[in-house]
Image (cartoon, rainbow, N blue to C red; front, side, top):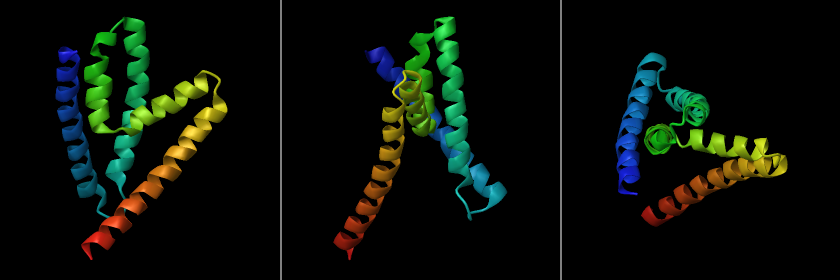
Length: 125
């Protein structure tokens, strides 16, 4: 348990640092007009999650999952975990549940950020 926690903590620090550097680089290259860094991170993270799922299962490296998947990719982007969860539901044949998960997460997530912004603005006015 402690070993897994340390792997996640180390990986999270590495992933968050990589996300920061990706965002800084993207902003320098493309400017502030569009969140290219976030797009790059989400797509790259999802692709890498797909690669890791297959490699770790086929090579028997599941002991590295806490470091690589939860830690590094979780710190890099939680969108990769979201993508994996949605695909797993789909692959299990739970297509409607996968669709509900995707739609629900997006709708409720957007509603939550709006609620958080509006509530905080009201409290700080």
